[in-house]
Length: 219
Image (cartoon, rainbow, N blue to C red; front, side):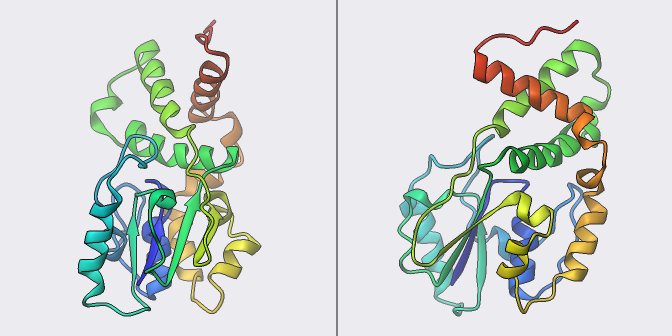
């Protein structure tokens, strides 16, 4: 069996769909409703899910493995750095080590939480700014690469931008229909004004506060 390890909002459903040669329906939060991409999920966190019991994940994987082949893929939010992956055929890790990847991930979360989520649509002013900035801090922490003979690391930004690295990873697989739909759903990631957008400003403010250990001063 194969595993895709990814923090939430980083294309786990999309990747599993591509690898398994399926075309699942889209979800309300801009993702892909792949059943397989949830097979290895045992939990999540607001930021990076690395505080879990590896035995719990291995137990779930072993249950799945009794009915699957080497061509089967499953997804999980668990960071695999504390996991023994030797029993798996291949592990793809979607990393967020770069600023660009972290920002893309935060933008997807922002759009879902603050543009489409009814509880926050009525909140405005400094209260909303404060909430957005504090939420953005969860997305500053990276989902780090993991070294292993059967592990492939790919940055989230490489997937979003359909880079040469992503094309190499998906060589021989059909991706055009998948990526066309994903880009149309997540159109805001491809806006030329992204670097001056409100979520970008919140991300910058969150990073400044964390790095300098002081409050951002609003005029």
